[in-house]
Length: 64
Image (cartoon, rainbow, N blue to C red; front, side, top):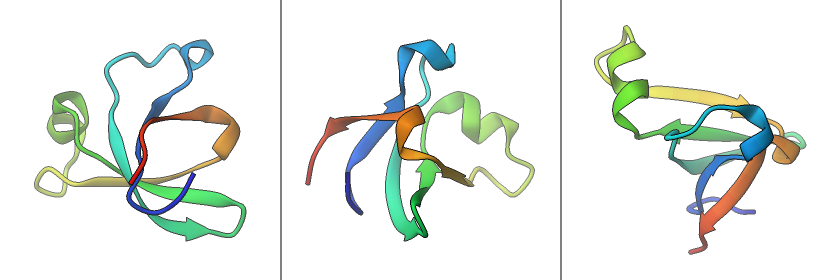
């Protein structure tokens, strides 16, 4: 996994529909900018949600 990859949560996380782009390495984790509709609605900062996620919670959908 690297910056620019499109990611989603693994099925065992029970968070279907979440889709994001890795925007930075954060120690051993990754900062992900979530781009799905649910994340945009839930964000209180005008539609942007960036969170730090451990790699074992994510899977790559598309590599850059």
